[in-house]
Length: 107
Length: 160
Image (cartoon, rainbow over all chains, first blue to last red; front, top):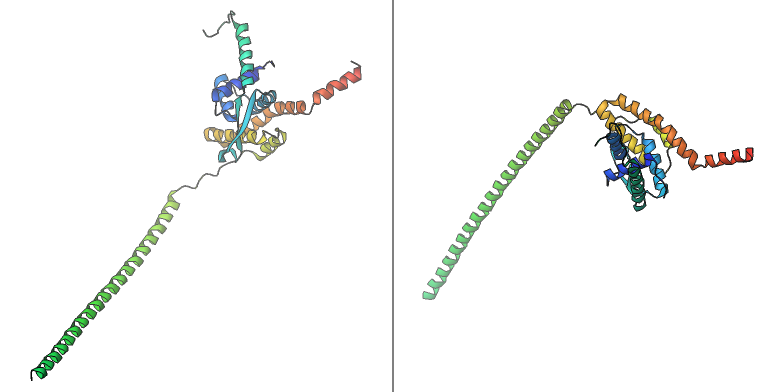
């Protein structure tokens, strides 16, 4: 299975958290809130495009609103294949981390 | 005699009946004429009231319009993201997600405008555009197969 990069992991986790309202702005705000730093919108879109090419994420066109200049939203959701890949990737990290002690880590 | 008297009585009765009928008819005609006159007066009065009320409503509407025009402050003009930045992004962004991407940036722009003001929102929009160059250029080069061409070139050049 294709390994996931860290950016891909965080974007996929943000999509999972914002379901079923996961689109560019909600993902951007979720990442900013949880990571305490702003991830450029372009990075999010490039990552989403890569994930879609890999078949981990699928998109669908949403409604257009005036505050978006009449442009439609694009909603994202994680496919079954994507969930399996994310689970494998996070489990690998957990296995690697198990038993290690980090100074300043939360209990 | 009796027959002659009887005929005379009949004639008198007939005349009396006619007179009574004519009186009743005249009374009824007078009543109808009076009722008609009364109705006409009522209609005239209603028309007058209607005209008066219409004029009052019109005056009240005009007054309300003037008052609302004076009281309501002029709505603030809604600003738009910098056109040059939008044009650059539209040129660089991938075709299938360009509209969604630009829409998202515009939504963030309006949120920032409400929170920090137009000046700061414009600055942040430009920063988003600047930070887009790297990832979008990288993605574009990958999409057109630039790196494959580059690798092939170096392999053929150095005989690898």
